[in-house]
Length: 80
Image 1 (cartoon, rainbow, N blue to C red):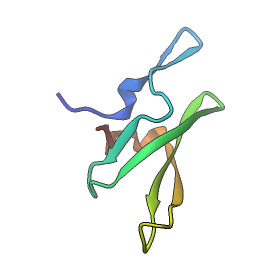
Image 2 (image 1 turned 180 degrees about the vertical axis):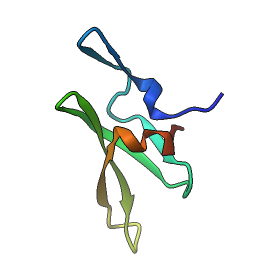
Image 3 (image 1 turned 120 degrees about the vertical axis):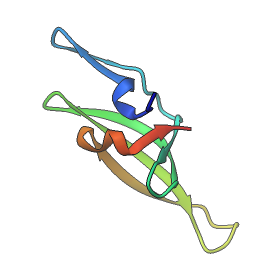
């Protein structure tokens, strides 16, 4: 069975049920880069996942880079 983020958001009878939560760790399948979900936005009935990962040149710095994942790209991500 293939895992992806589509299983975390279900739409039933004009209602969207979200099973994804902030702080859930997800992985981009092609690159194996891991992200943490910050929040899920619903725009015009379509979910968009806002996620981040840490990056820096040194351990003392903790910078974040944010990405938006539209529903069309959910199949490229899996729960860690």
